[in-house]
Image (tube, rainbow, N blue to C red; front, side, top):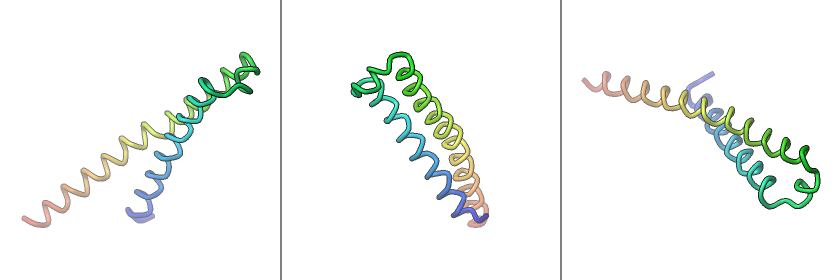
Amino acid sequence: MSDAKLIRLLKSCIVLGICLILTGIYFHNFSPSVEAMGVKGIILSAVCVAVGMALSLPTKMYLTFILVKREAEQQDSQH
């Protein structure tokens, strides 16, 4: 897989993770149907936030590592 495709995939994972986090927050604070579910609703919103965090945080770190590595390679090639 090329770097461009990998970066696009990682950015997509970050966006999906952020969307899941926001969905979990919405479920927890603003959704009356999830509130009516009781404990199951709390678990549903917590799972959305947890999966979103699992998708977004490690992906951000790896993407940062790739971009720093690419920048270092570009600087080495210029000198």
